[in-house]
Image (cartoon, rainbow, N blue to C red; front, side):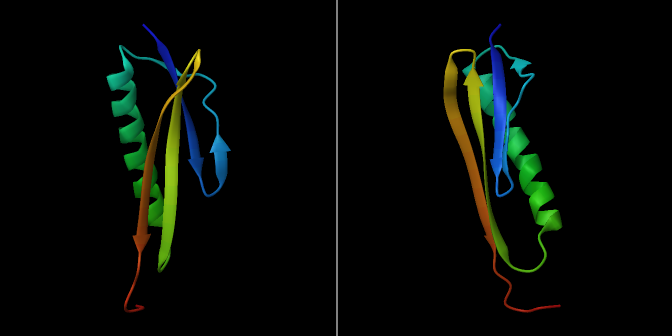
Length: 82
């Protein structure tokens, strides 16, 4: 079973994955990256005050090098301040 590593990149920099996960194939790695980005997006929205934008990505690699990049971006534009 191949081992995939998920390096997280956001406005704060890059956090390399030193451990990785053993997954059955590239589709499973893509699913894992998408789920992780969903969690990152939830956390970013919870900490974003007012308007703002965020872009984040996960670079997936195996022992031979990069295999895919999964990106997510969003923006919040408030018309009214509470």
